Image 1 (cartoon, rainbow, N blue to C red):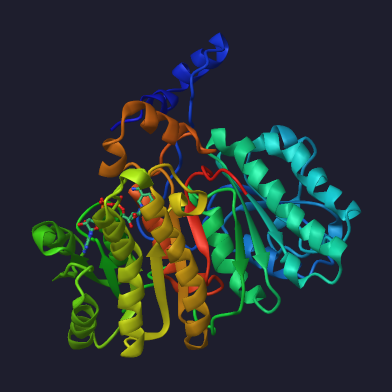
Image 2 (cartoon, rainbow, N blue to C red):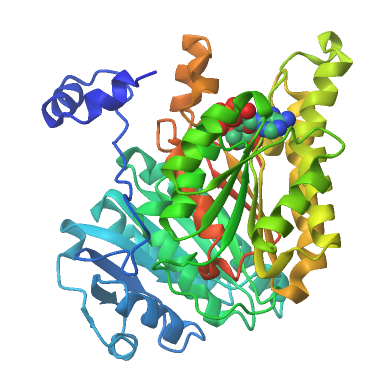
Length: 469
Ligand code: NAD
């Protein structure tokens, strides 16, 4: 279902007229999205302003990422900080009136409440210059590794700051995110920064990412053709997010096994044809499904590198009116199947070292939703599962993460009553729904070696719609 306000927003004359007349209409900014495979220079030809402190322990890794990003880098700060950059120039006078495509602040050195003012000093004059589909990125150290309670407080403060900044810049189609670099994971920062600075993260905003060395290191972390030679299983691949994900993984070089229910075999075959993959017709709810999937992967590919547990269903009803079968369907397909299939693949040692397990959760599971006690229980359960399994598989360099989509324009959202659909779209910081491609980008990033620093985490792809603590 097309979004009238988003279409109107694409027309600069209409935008200006709505602004001039002061009409109370939502005018979301169309998002700049990536097309084709991941590019190694996420900010090619764009302008990035970087701030921080020369003595910061992350000054060197941050400078390396920005130097290689393809951006014209302007450094807001001391001459000593500028010298950290091979390609950086000083921020010119009056830069606040110019346009910046990215604002990157290294806040990892903050130790006291007084230091926190540096965040204001960097962003306050520049935030107005952040262009449409711009990127604000804060880099910090995790509160639980702080030496003092005051230092922990300042590190945690970055979270509230970034979530709120995301709300302020969202109507421009811009995002704001926070990366906590854990000790020993400095060399894993680059992949996560590149993703968050790129157009691939168009619908990811207002959240913290923990980059750690928890999972054993996985080698080359470049973006180009990152999945060449890898085998990927995508469940629920016949349509929607699963179909786009299968194509996106294939675009990065993976051989994709497209799994869906037997009644959707024809649709799954069309997807497999488009991405040069193969089809597996299985109902993931069947008790024999894990063994059938494992045998198929063992026989045809000798194992698997990427497992995307995407198959999902909703069976909405308020709890008092919910049939037990609706409860069971939602819990067993959304949660029981990922748990049982992963258990079987791990027990038969089919997930190769450096592998990736990615489960689809939902913001409904994080925030709760009326009429979705079954679905939200299952999707919150998925979060618990990835946290637990991440620890179990870390020594093999296998990461386990969840992706939690918000309002994504699919047949699910097309079927909503018009008012509910409008509210769902406008509630996000970006003021619009996401596209299946946005979720597929998050999944393909988590499937790649560049995400080696992320495990046991939830990446929301919700445009900042998540309300609450
Ligand atoms: P969709 O209904 O378009 O696609 C789901 C696919 O899963 C279908 O092809 C379906 O046949 C398959 N499937 C369902 N039950 C199955 C089973 N028992 N065995 C094998 N395959 C089965 O849904 P979508 O919108 O693309 O959602 C994909 C995932 O993302 C789901 O897990 C969903 O819960 C999650 N999600 C979607 C949204 C959204 O806004 N669309 C929001 C949050 C989370």
